[in-house]
Image 1 (cartoon, one colour):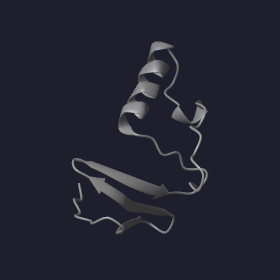
Image 2 (tube, rainbow, N blue to C red):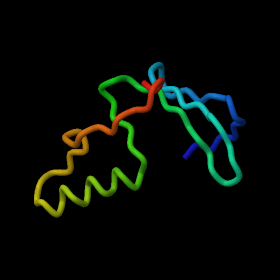
Image 3 (cartoon, helix red, strand yellow):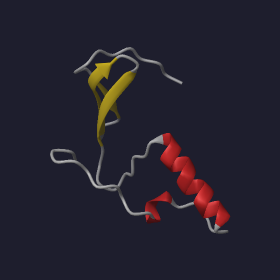
Image 4 (cartoon, rainbow, N blue to C red):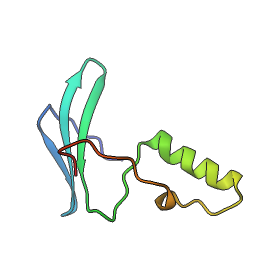
Length: 77
């Protein structure tokens, strides 16, 4: 695992299409902004694990993409 140190406003790039920006740091919380291609789903870990668990309970294959995507706030991509 790569571990990086960033300050508010600084960015991390993953390949050519993914950008992660440290938007704000408040105490122990960090707000991140993530820009990714439209076809690439981005989930918080706990939500992704919930999707996998629900799919397993239903006896199906875990497919997070089939779930409705959360609505984005104005200005988010």
